[in-house]
Figure 1 (tube, one colour):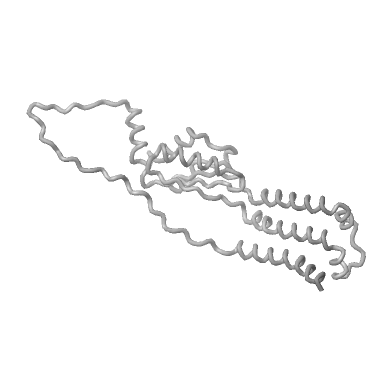
Figure 2: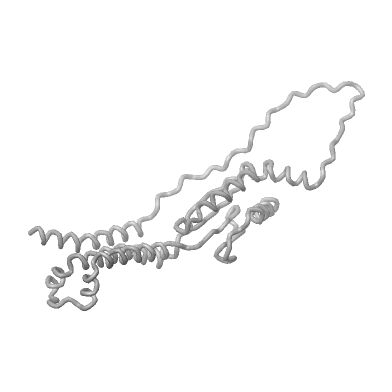
Length: 226
């Protein structure tokens, strides 16, 4: 009786995991809260003082580069949004956080959003199947000699005998290979940067990451045109 329960658990667990993964895959994500851009800083109203007689205001001439830098570092970032969509499973989060801090420093008030760039749907579906296959193979290695007679196979196949000859090595190899395959299927390799909904840099097209100075200049050109 205990052996029958163990066999039912080994057979039912992969089916349960597969059904739960399919349910999570096709369940729509919860709606995102409405995004409110940060309001520009309040500039206090200074009281005007009466100028003495004979006072002539003196204007200061700044170089053009300093004026431009002051404009970009001032209020140009307010009301604008930069989205960095990157592959989370590819360990790109550190680069994305570095770029986010740089942009927020260079353009005060700029709203920088980090989000995951998912892999294509066929790869995501295959990635959901891999854990089920892992559990099935491991369950077959552990209790295959009792499962085959239940499904009408009196003589186990040759590949099963090879796996059972080195049981622990076969289970470890199945686990490691499945994890590697699942990580590969979940990765998109993307690092896409959008400014106000317009693509300004794409790792999928360029095949590389943007440099900090390069990305700063691309965002600066985009913001000055708007």
